Length: 116
Length: 115
Image (cartoon, rainbow over all chains, first blue to last red):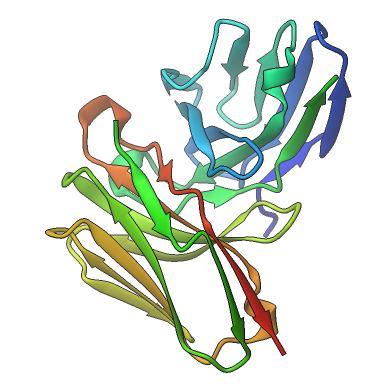
């Protein structure tokens, strides 16, 4: 079956623009995660959804970052008034059940955001 | 804050060598540990997942071990091939209540296997 997909794959934004990044998890997966990966670094956690509920958003770096998953499937990560330090690869991952199962997280290809 | 460290940062070996990648973590409340592979411009591919109750997992030429008492995990790659060239990331999940679920990643080991 299809894996996790993300769009767009690449996004160039001018500083101050708003951007929206989309994630389509594996069908039926309950848990959805967003991570941010800066160049040369490992991914860092941003936020986690179980179905449509956002259970952990403590990793979001500022109030300019907002994520939603209104119907418990597709998720959107929105960044308002982008700044150069937001340039990174944004990775989405999903897993079949809630986190207590400690299952494998399956990652999408990421969206590479460049803020000029 | 949980810290996950990987050494070496980069490794270059000739084809056919057996090699070991190291990962260490500071929090003893490890829930599971996962090894990923990342190819340039691509997402992460899960290689092996070790639950805290397990000591090792094997898949083909890959073997990963977990030692909770010392806070270490190793990924062993047997008979390396040029196609193994990639960045290898380890990630820990820690049982700290509300943060369960998030993965804490190391910075990765960039592996090059030359023919």
